[in-house]
Amino acid sequence: MRRAVELAGTRLGRTSPNPVVGCVVLAPDGTVVGEGFHKGAGHPHAEPEALAAAGDRARGATAVVTLEPCAHTGRTGPCADALLRAGVARVLYAVPDPNPGAAGGAERLRAAGVEVVGDVLREEAERVNELWLTAIRRGRPCVTWKFGGTLDGRSAAPDGTSRWITGPAAREDAHRLRASHDAVLVGSGTLRADDPHLGLRHGVPGEPPLRVVLDRTGSIPPGARVLDDTAPTLVAVGDSAPKPQLPGGHEVLVLPETGGRLDPAVLLDELYGRGLRSVLLEGGARLAADFAGRGLLDRVVAYVAPMLLGSGGRAVLDGFGAGTLTEGLRLHLDEVRRLGDDVRMVLRGRPLPGAREER
Image 1 (tube, rainbow, N blue to C red):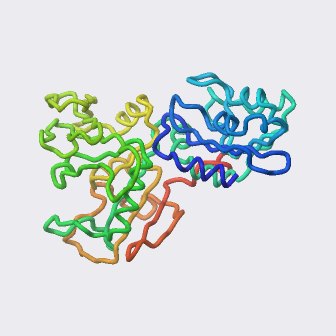
Image 2: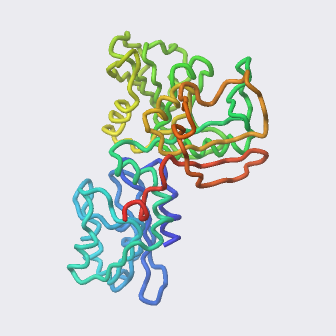
């Protein structure tokens, strides 16, 4: 199963609206005779890929898969039926499919006489597929807030300089994080202050995510770097704003304004409807506070540098204020890793979705 999880992880950020899934087929003597993973929407699922590699050796074999085989027909046929046609005798899976439209494969296999065992290394498989699982369970894209800051929570010096608070190892890791998401989101303040590009650098492979700019007034400069042809960009503006004219390949999304602001929950609904299952929130401090205040942060990835800037520096979070300790947003620390002189922390607003939460 760990090999199947490893295979699934190779496609992070490339399969939406589908999950990442890996599959390994074992002959009765335990020999690996086939491996596969889901490459993306419209491509065969992991099970048919592994079965094709196994060929006739799949008869009487064991299929090990990270997600319960599906029982529905979408762009491809049910994986449960493919396993039955191949003559597989036993199926081990890690995570029950939370999508009611696709679930039921385990019962279909059992009804046909196949031995089925679930919850095998479930927590590890949950982790690799966390973004998709969170999105399906909550009905909106999984939101990760990523920031780089100092030990005292500052993202820039008083004069606005911020390059580079963190070192090269942290910056490279941040680009790998970006590549694993479907969309990367910034606000208009960050756009004006930093003119970010939001593509992939540092040799990180893969297709750049959709670039999303929340710009209520529609004031995005025509020469902004996010409007180049490296990747598509979606600019969300308020319904009272003039609609900016964007170069070809980019799109304007008009959202309703409430109290002079755009509701991030409405934006997430729009993105979910477009098939996006994960959003990386990269800036800025007020936008992050808006998401935090509305309970829309699922994960936080913090790159903390061993530096102090003091009270004059720009805070990583601006506008989210707890009046007392019990009103603070308590996060669950999940991972800590050193990257050069910096520290990378992964925290969650809720425990990792999965076996413990659902049972």
